[in-house]
Image (cartoon, rainbow, N blue to C red; front, side, top):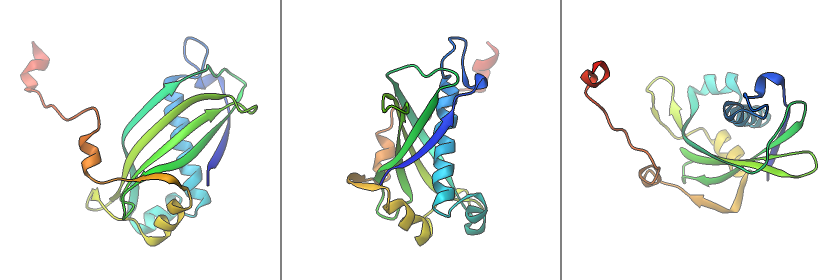
Length: 164
């Protein structure tokens, strides 16, 4: 199953080139995920009751066609990766014009966290059931090892470097 969420592109969503700003793509993806969760009865209020929250660990984009002010854009959501316990997930979002032209694709890898412990956790069965509806036969099984494959790793620096 694929979830779709529609946006009307506003002036404030544009950048200096007068097309949809990179930051707006991020916001549209986040809002699409929240609309999906609300539809599946796991909105902000329910997440608070469960004491969990979704956290995006890595996000990447490919752009194919510009999107302009006053256009309608439809953002899809599919789950193309998920750990067996659903604690790790990967959403794929595709941006379309109403006539079906594919403008961009985004991939967001995340985890569910326990809001008190601030640690990764297994979500409640209701969340797992909802997420399972949006998996396809091509959805891969993810593990913590998949985080090691992400392109960036933490690399701390001596704070004295900031004052040179």
